[in-house]
Image (cartoon, rainbow, N blue to C red; front, side):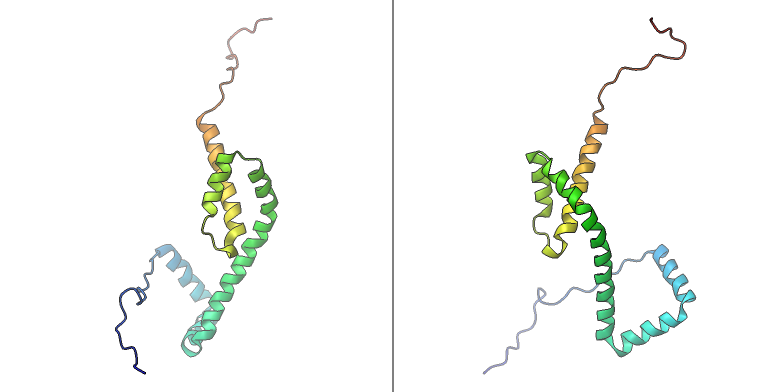
Amino acid sequence: MAIDQKEKTDATKPKPLVFRDNPEVKKKIEAHKKANPDDVTYYTRLVKENPERAIETFLYRDQQKHENEMRLIQKQLPQARAFYNEQTVEAKARIDRDLEGVNPYMKDKAFVSAALREKDRQARREFANPVQTPTPPTAGAKVAA
């Protein structure tokens, strides 16, 4: 049985990571590092000595963040569904279009976000086209009796 010795193409090689450089974030990190030197030591050792555990630590933090976000989403979901059910066919289609291809793990969060965007879009449209109301009389004008 021959061993496949084809060179990897560019499509199979991962692209190099690109990091953003935000001076404000760096300043906050440096302040945190200065205030918590034991954390710096721990995380430095964790990454060097046990990279698999470091990966799990990062993923666990992401999972905790997701759980916290989902607690809020679960509170907002009934109102978002009620809003969706009250919408016109066109508005529902816009929301449904926003949900196409969304990972099922993120479906509820995406639904609430899409409903909020639609509500915001409708509010902006109302402000752009205000209803004409009669102007109140000025302070010096006499009111007819």
